[in-house]
Image (cartoon, rainbow over all chains, first blue to last red; front, side, top):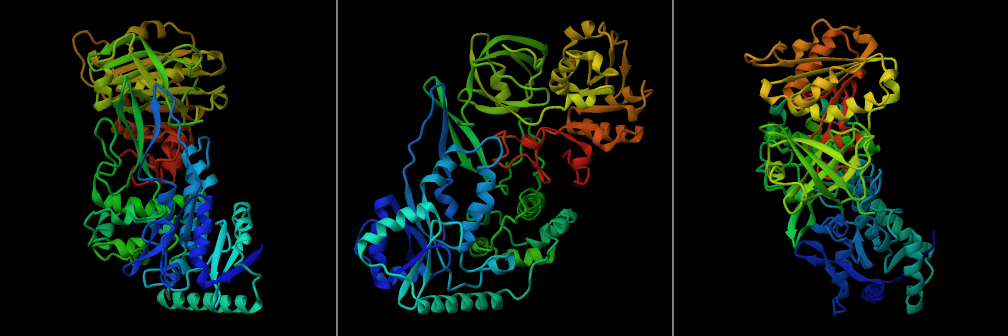
Length: 342
Length: 270
């Protein structure tokens, strides 16, 4: 793995240079959190950019770039094509890149039929991950085998030196980005002092996470969920749920969608819309039967999908502890407590 | 290849089977070949798409048939199509029956209502190599005589060598000379030992549930009870999530799933 570094003050220049590879998104402060913002070459406070880069995952999950909430996927009778252009996405944390690789790639790129649009985006989009030095109370990657930094999955990774940003090149696409960046005259070799500082920051973040989440999750979650068939358990464990579906809509591992057709000319356009299993009609079939008609069944279904079915099918839990569902919940439900109550 | 993109299929014929069930004979271009047990996503252009298992022989290359009951939005619109209209199909999807492993065994096909439609495709595939199996037992139950699908075909099927046919209706009438009772009454006095055979079941959820219970009582092995577990299969190829049943996806791991793979679930027939 090759690495280089550049001064904190050059972050805006870094973004500007990345934007030559495609439409670029970066984390921008938005109140007490960050969200992905389109880079428009405007004058921005470099300290604000740096502060945003250090904060935990942006509000939107990374998957939103790859699985849009609504997109046309086919037409009839004429053939449908789509022009997908490269993008550069800066700011994915370890929890998010792992949901893309461990969950969405397993669904959308494996099996007999790949999703061609997801695949093309995965091939064309550049992902730049960032260390996560400032975990917050909703974070729990550490109890799901995660760390507040990542050394794989993206194309480049940004970590923090005392006065510099350290860039690790993680892929061939990352090499392509870095070859261009080397022309801008701001980068240099990484020093041992920079790496020592980074190690210290990473260790601090891990310590902080260990304090936030002292207790590990049960190791036999699939079996526990399988045995919890009593609707009353789910009714009680998620008693404050008002069925707003915010937890699912914000979840980086939820992958469900439905297809619907809109009349167009003598044929139709087929649209793929992300769908969520708390929705009452989620399981309904043509004749009206609905195996998930009762809300406690739908509550269980969400947990069964992420913590039972997914690990059995793909050897990985479909949750990386990003904590978005906790932040988004209007009923203040904490998924960690539900899992521990199993 | 775009798996969401269907191909056109012109309607060649519409056969009225019962007041609420019709068979649609389609000619997809290019032809759509499938193996028994697989299903297809069928669209009424501009209305929507739904999964159906073909009811014709997989050895028929040019046309493909679907026998469909009018139950919902898409099927209601489907009943308005006429020969010459164009529908759209994509697939096939799912795991076909492993017919090779059925050789030298008794094969019990147990259908309820319109559930005979996908089983007809299996039946016709078995007939293609009929001497490979010990015997084929086609047992079928409907609510009443006028709701029997393929009544036009049973007379010829009864003449086939190596095939036994039994039928029942829940409620008979003056003309009905065969058995009366729910479909499981047909399983009394089986003419073969369950250990020497396998059963393939398709029908409404309750019929599947009680048929499975009866087959287990009779001594069929869990892995010899094949159940057509068609759920809300929106994409057809294991991506959209809707048809998950425990850790299986009905579309890519089924739609026909043996009892041993789902018996641990609370109630797979809900």
